[in-house]
Image (cartoon, rainbow, N blue to C red; front, side, top):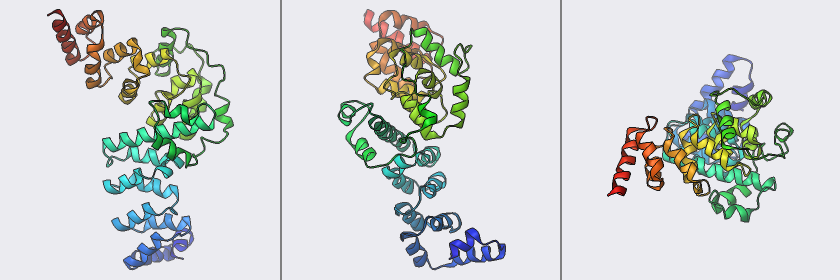
Length: 340
């Protein structure tokens, strides 16, 4: 009754009195209500107007009857790391509601290690579910890949995905079935450069850009995972980390596109880190060279790759002004050791 008055009563005096009454309820009464299977609007009022203590917030997070939009709001504002970690552990809710993952990744109280774990799990599970649903891969094929594991696929199969798993005319129209391989390395680089505004756009992608502006995050994820090279070239620099990371899981992405991404100074460093972790991508010697020469690549990764490079490339890197001093110095040291 208090929730209805707070949310719908036109008289401001009555609304305020109902809010005060809610705040003055005994702690055991409030906690019992939060733990019960109430109607979703009641949980929304409790979360927004209840001035909840830690025990009440934890009960709200743990109650499976709480609607996803309430969890999203908690994920956006909560500063208790233990409670945030409970939210991260709610894999079903994360796969059901993409905004929950976004809110957690944007919350500065969640540490970088937990964010990395969250992003990696979500990408594996969400992408795996979509690929299986669209008939692009079987579970057995995914389990044999470095990108997926049993835990992620188990969670994905038990969750219904928000929007992106359903038939989507807006996205499906943009997913081309004849995704020709990029003709050469230069063309692949132009795709990345044009998407980042670094070169004259020789491909008319204005309609695609307009469509992307109207898309929800689940729609962008689906397009990143299954779209053609033009969509990938735009989505790889999407400001949403989840969207851009899905581009690398697109089964149709070519080796030349990966090389172009590894060379690009417009992508985020986490994209380069993902490429460096993938054994499939790292089979290419040119990708290793591109990562070392890209100033956006984390120094630790570049250092690990340096000993794998040929002398001619090491000499060029040692003289290069575009890499950090640490990388250039290490390249010189490796050359000296080889000469000795």
